[in-house]
Image (cartoon, rainbow, N blue to C red; front, top):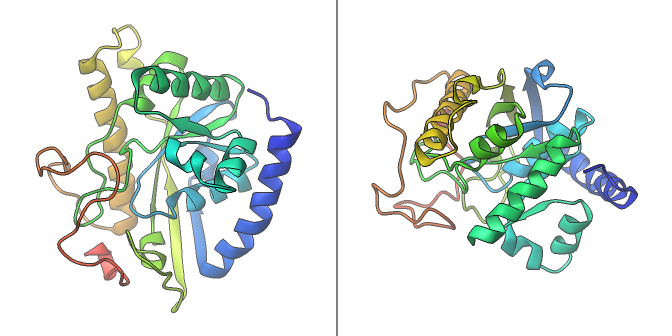
Length: 257
C-alpha cells in the first residue's frame, strides 16, 4: 500500500502540528533507531498512557517512515479526528471476526509495500498497577507469521509523567524526558512451519511481550514482575477504561510506583 498524495499531505499537516507540541511538552531520547529494518516492519511498543501513539508516531515519522496504526474503530467515528485518520490511511480495528480479518489484511498491505505498521500487543492501556506490560493479544504475532515481516519491539518511559494514565490534564513542569528504546527484531523463526493455531500464536506473542518487557526494564533500571499481569485473572475487562483503586491524575513517582 503506497502512500497516496493525500496521505502524504495529511502526514505533513499532522507532523507540523504535533512535532512542535511534543518538543515543547517533553525532551526526547531515542536509542536503537539503527535497528529499524529498511523494508516493511511491525513496531510493537508498550502502552501505558493515552499519548503513547503520538510518542511512537513522532519517532517513526522522524525516521522517514510514515506510521500506520491499528486504531480502535470508534475513533474513526469522532468528527474531524476520524477524517484525519482515514486521510492518513490508519487502520480501524473491529471486534468482529470479519472486521478483524479486514484490519489484518490492510496491515499486511502496509508491510508488504515496505511500510511501518504499529501494533500495541496489549490492545489497550496496561492494567498493571506499576505500568509493566501486561498479557498481550495475538494480532502482532499473527501478522508477522503471515507476512514474514520483522517485529521490532519498542519500549518508552516518561510519557506517563507528562500525561498519567486516564489523567485529565498535562503535567508540563518541570520538563520531562521521554526515552524510547528500540530492540532487535524478535526471532520468530521457530514458528515458521507451524500452523497458526492458538498455541503457536500465544507462544509467539509471549516472545514479543518478553522483548518489550526487557527493554522497559532497561529503561526503568528495575526488575519486572515474575508473572505478567493478566486482566482476566484480576477480573478486569480486556478493552476500554477500567477503574483504578487510586487516581492517576498526578505525576508518577520515580520508577512509576
